[in-house]
Length: 87
Image (cartoon, rainbow, N blue to C red; front, side):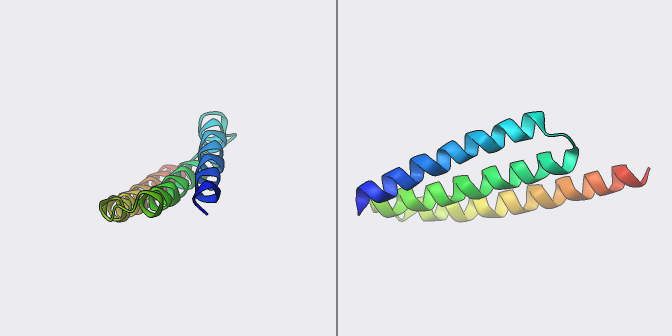
């Protein structure tokens, strides 16, 4: 079962690199915001998988803090983009 989780982690990290490309080359700002959100979500899932594989509960605490920071940053970016479009 552990090799499956390691393979899933590698596949998710490859998805992070694809989203990173979209964040740099996105046609508009909303695509870039969604790419950053996808990177945060994939990184969160990878942290949870690492916590399960290694058996360290500290990684779950880090994942929870990272999820909160990711959510707050996406809300701030979305509000900034919304206010910029109104001008």
